Length: 254
Image 1: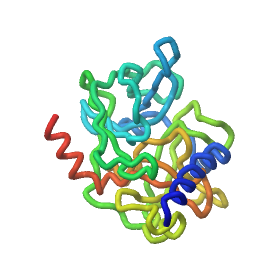
Image 2: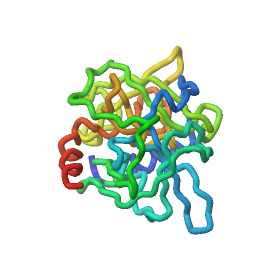
Image 3: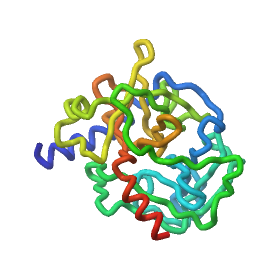
């Protein structure tokens, strides 16, 4: 596939996400169902209010995992991590600042490849009432169900005020490549989506950075997709199992 066609697919994925923004088959949930889940909020300038941007995952008391695209070129002093909060616009969670962002060295923002970043917090999280989450040692079999949570777009709104939970089914890599193109889906990605009745269950715009969780272990992060809830185009996730060694190497350096 030629480079210009890759770029066209990339642009269309964001255009379709805006036009078809929805999560179907999800339901409201409490933060107790995902104590590892955090909100990333950002303000455009010093006098602007903080707004919900993405999600993240508590990996340790000092490190949050998220996608690189979520924090690419952001000013650290305008970025907040909020833990223990179920409401998108709420202010009762624990607010933390970010000291440093570690991007995967092969992050490619044009093709959303190696879409991973570690956020090093200025002060450690008190994990009482929260929870870190481990990365699974291997990927579940295709067809396995995993959970996702987030405040992203829903079937009836551009963003959800309350945390949403959904179950999605892991898709065979070959099937995902058939949908997006053989070379478009790298080993650093995995795909998931499922059905609830005649509705497609999927993550959507605003859910990026949230964990795909199987058996209480993270296997992926919401990354990108061609629209939301499209039958032939499952959601694409950063493959955390693939990056487990790199993450461990970075943690050892902290």
